[in-house]
Length: 169
Image (cartoon, rainbow, N blue to C red; front, side):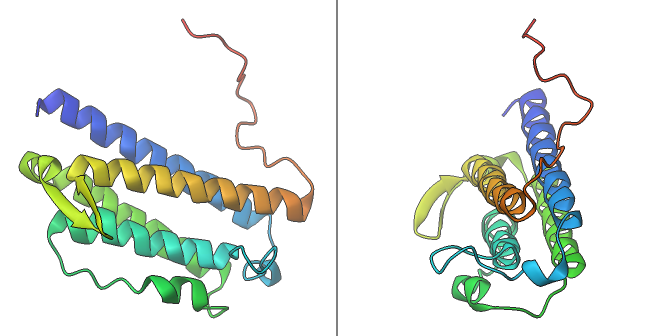
């Protein structure tokens, strides 16, 4: 894999994960502790569960798999926990997980990026794992944002001060 292409993959994956963290932090700052474990209904997850789920998924795909470590994920527990973490603790756990994944992505060999492996029953290359963790983090960031908007009935201001109507050059 070309070094410039590899660097571009790492830079953009890291940027997208940092963007999701930024948005989740904005959401958490707008929420009280008592709603973090609240579920919109029985078929959805609380923000607390979503963050624990993200930590488990990112660890499984972006850390354990890419580093060749044992997969110790307990996916069911991510959704069965109903309390026990404050929002600041949850956010720090997510930040630590993402930072470890970013470090892993930056350090993993080109051979590992191209190597196919089974994760959660799916076969992906290391690049596929990276794409998965970025899109999965973004997907659940959107759910957290929507639930925050519903709870607060206000815009989140993710892009305050940015003109999003600018056309492509």
